[in-house]
Length: 166
Image (cartoon, rainbow, N blue to C red):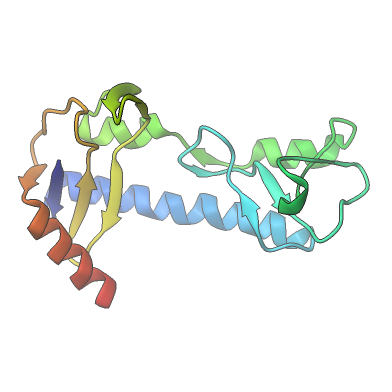
């Protein structure tokens, strides 16, 4: 299901506040990563934006542990690196719930798909030119609230392409 929130609505303004907060939390995470001599990292697990779950280094830093597969070169500070862990834990984040609450999407949900189950934590968001585009996974339960207008898939794609080209 595809939806849009048009510029000029109260909900659009709330999303613009969220967008500014997303920029802030992502910038703070990147600044910490860069201060450690890296530029690639994974966000914190089970968080929509912000935080650090692992940092990519060419070689394992002293006092850090490997996270994931060896070829990923992803590391996280060991518990003995108290100051660094305090910095990591102090980073601001945005939860899935904070996003879902704006449009009253109830999550988590599970849906049947391809003979299995899919876990849905959050709506999909895309900032268009004069609107916010929202995607809700097919099969998930959602009733749009005021300012959330359901649109056809074709309109969603047109608006997304138009925004991508700008």
